[in-house]
Length: 133
Length: 133
DNA sequence: TATTGACTTAGAGTGAACTTCAAGGTTTAT
DNA sequence: ATAAACCTTGAAGTTCACTCTAAGTCAATA
Image 1: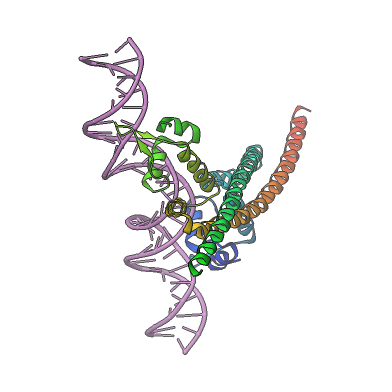
Image 2: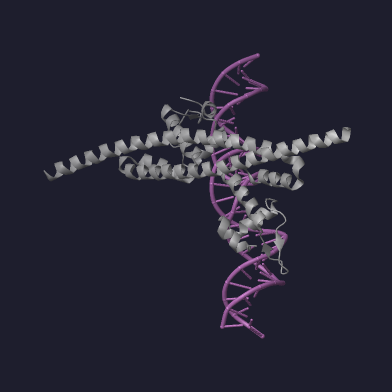
């Protein structure tokens, strides 16, 4: 069992964010101490792991919340969950391919500017020489 | 020369967004007709191309705006521009690698759920058989 | 037992990137 | 010449994902 502080350190999410995620239905059924403090189980940590993966691949929190709710409902939602993950996976792949294309253009531009910079520096050096002649 | 409508179609950005980008300093010096309508030149289109690449690889608009301002200032800002693009490029590569890792985990989870679904469907079929027996 | 520090809640505030609105001016086709 | 379609501006509104505040509660320690 982990305190919210420990979970924050392990996941990199702030304690604020962890409470916010709970409020938004991304995590559910977190146990409490008598005093009302959150106690995260290993299953909660696992769930958080998947949540972070989905979030970091660009799934909106609403959709993650939907996924978590389906999980809670049990095995008869397996088909829908498989569909969701499959569709998300395809989206991510497409986005990454597009990202790569855009990155290639950025790289091209970077090379172009690097060349231009070299020419500029050469011109500057020449001018400096002329001045000192 | 292109009207804002044509540029919108070519770039996929809404006319609203194009005006917004101008206001935020992402595009500058767009010509106008006597009536005050925007007229985008081929150079404007080129600039928009790079802007979209930077945006689509996750550079914040503020930073793009900074880059555009440096470009406007001339060749003595080449070094800084090269540095900016270089740093951005490294960031994108790192993010893409992380994204790939997260995607791998999603794929793994998808396979896991697909297996679980198969087992569930087999169990259901069996139960249906028993009922009809 | 008193104080320090971490925890609780509801709710307000933030920043990024749009998006919509209101009120009006311009172009073009009939 | 007049309607329809398109353009202009400034400003307000929206969505997402946090992030912070205030006022109070709980736990450990000197």
